[in-house]
Image 1 (cartoon, rainbow, N blue to C red):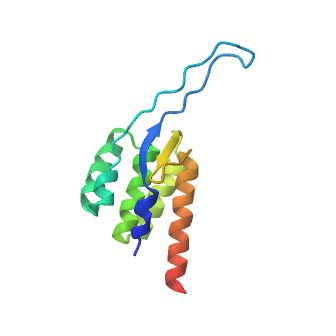
Image 2 (image 1 turned 60 degrees about the vertical axis):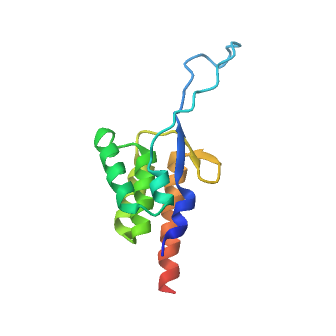
Image 3 (image 1 turned 45 degrees about the vertical axis):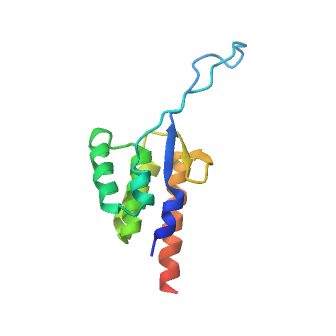
Length: 132
């Protein structure tokens, strides 16, 4: 039913790095390091939805506002067919004070809030399609 959500899952997260140097500074800034997070991608792509939910819930106990974990939790709920919980997780990710760039399964990098809003939109469209 919602299997296409697996293609939009997060693989890695790049912590946003804000420069404290003034804009006029000419010193080259090093590229931000890419921080890899375990966001149950493998479990989700292999259809181990319950395992992914268990892993993601445990991670969210330590960091309840982590957008990568919230988005993938929403995707896991969507795979399970639980639209309400999926939407709740996506909304929490979009509203999170924590924000960084995330890599999607297709290799593109987007802001975590954008990824969450896009996932919520796909969820809404899938629901509308079911009603047609």
